[in-house]
Length: 306
Image (cartoon, rainbow, N blue to C red; front, top):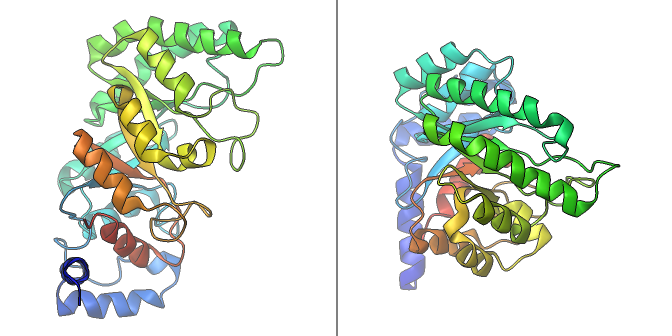
């Protein structure tokens, strides 16, 4: 057995943990989605506590057979340090804040402004700024430091240049609000080929340019490695070139948008690159577990081995 393989096996064994965990895992592999993993005790200090990368589980895509608050409990039982979710509207903000405080896990980020209406049109500018003010208040209630904003879908009466200029303007106008609140807006570029045709912002080039023009410590990029792989590839090189504007990282493998280890991306190398560049914040697991949540968590842990 080679030295790298010995290290991998040792890390995998550490992630699996105690005999109680093994018994629970065997039961969970055959369980219905609604039964994960609350029906059996799980070693709290095991699989989600990885040595290099701090992962935040996206509870819009994981544990979907459970009620929303139970998804947070399930994440905590796997030992992950944080969760992320999509729009805050309609959520029980105080209940979420109380539960995460009780469990000792963080909310890495949530979505403050989505695809529609697009901030890439002047007629939505005032609404965008009002929403940013409200979302900053929500972030404080959640003890959350970051929130995602989306540029918007194509506006038929605007050119690409006009749309991106308006995105820049909106973020410039929002930056004093964000800086005063000490909450970071993270702008997310999408991909056109698989998930989001008809959007106005793809890849790192325009996103980096916009954030450099805004020039605020509280306006950065939600650098989703899944979208970047589909749009431009060269994940390590692009990440290094734009690292000064990275506010947050998300991931999923491709094809399939499942967890690391199920597609073509060598996430051990990419996560190592981020770590070596100095990234120490959360990495959002915006991916769908391919087989079940427990096996997905194991694959995530394996991607942090180097």
